[in-house]
Amino acid sequence: MREVEVSEITKEIAELCQEANFELGEDVINAFKDGLENDESPTAKAILEQLLENAKIAREDRVPMCQDTGFTVIFVELGQEVKLVGGDLEEAINEGVRQGYKEGYLRKSIVSHPLKRENTGDNTPAVIHTKIVPGDKIKITVAPKGGGSENMSEVRMMKPADGVEGVKDFVIERVKESGPNPCPPIVVGVGIGGTFEKCAYLAKKALLRPIGDESPHEDIAQLEKELLEEVNKLGIGPQGLGGRTTVLDVNVEIYGAHIASLPVAVNINCHAARHKETII
Amino acid sequence: MAEIKLTTPLTEEKVRELEVGDKVLLSGTIYTGRDAAHERLVNLLEEGEDLPIDVDGQVIYYVGPAPAKPGKPIGSAGPTTSYRMDPYTPALLNEGLRGMIGKGSRSQEVKDVMEEEGAVYFAAVGGAAALIAKCIKKAEVVAYEDLGTEAIRKLEIEDLPLIVVNDAANNDLYEIGAEEYSEV
Ligand code: SF4
Image 1 (tube, chains in turn green, orange):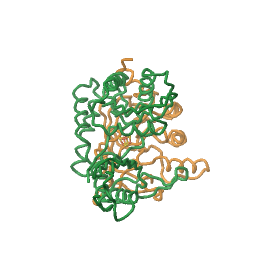
Image 2 (image 1 turned 90 degrees about the horizontal axis):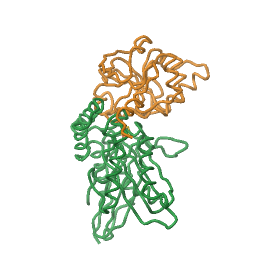
Image 3 (image 1 turned 120 degrees about the vertical axis):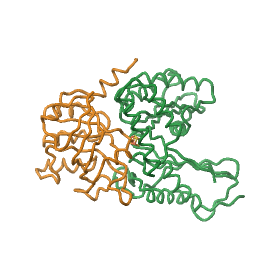
Image 4 (image 1 turned 90 degrees about the vertical axis):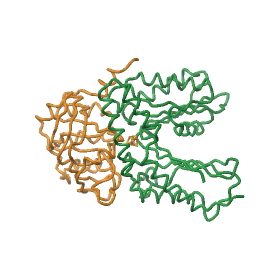
């Protein structure tokens, strides 16, 4: 067994929370540049230019690219040969969030009770997904998720007979109805299969894939391609003000399904498509 | 598509000259306010009380900024989604509010009252928060400090880049723009 102090996890998370909010991924930046080159709408071009400039300022000045520094969603892949010592994993993760959001001057956007709505003041609790995997490493991904785009997401329990066409209609409908609200250009994560909660988890995980990445399943890669084409025909454009650059990528993840069910989740991410990872 | 320099406070006459799609560089004083502050303002109006800020001729920016780093007036400060303010907006427009800055569509009711009263809704680029913060020269909490990021702040801004999304003639760029580029 390899021993790892949980304080090391705290330290890494504090750092990742800041990096994720300050440094937009190169894949997203390149997608902005493609849009800038190819979009016909002058308003779209002007907005994409602002987004490129914004990403540059955030990186250079170490300030958050967006004021909504999100719900801190954290994926932990914990090697089964790791023994954690020195404290509680969940508490160590939350402590990392607490430190990162304070040190980085990131906004605290979490309330402790969904109905009484009092701000916790330190952006905790994080949403933590832990998976035990083979090996003796710990992989940590921090993905701050903005409220504006999260609010446009949906899970739908479809009928198996709805099939691939039903899934496509649902995804297109979500993008269309979201319009300007999730700050397009957006990234769309789709989870198909599993149970109610599993498909939502898959949709969230799909958002971690780099832009341009293709599903390893041939038919799903094809579906991703078709969906991307269709949603970009809607004309919504950057910020919903008209144009071709509405969706930067559609990523679909699948899982086995019950003979009676076809659960589908659409998780929408804004252009502040933030995620940073590390391996301990 | 014109690029127009404007300074607050705004008059009805100036606002009615603005057209959907106009690019505006806004300077002067504006106020921040989002969900919780709007609720309080409208509760005061319903009780017949005075507001802590005079909204007449003013512009409200829907934003909950990130905390300021030492030596900076404000942290990143991009717009939040406006539809959540729709239920409260008509009451403020009736008090003379001339402009709003946010992102996303407004309700038909808000658009109708904007037309009646002569008001404009601007979009700032959602998520361009670090860039926008550079246009904010001063920030000061003027009401509801207990609300933290949601407190009402008075901002001094210089050339804040905005786009007119809803003009006072009930035009909506979210509808017009998407229609123009739609292929379905
Ligand atoms: S949707 Fe994303 S880019 Fe827009 S305000 Fe929220 S976090 Fe920022």
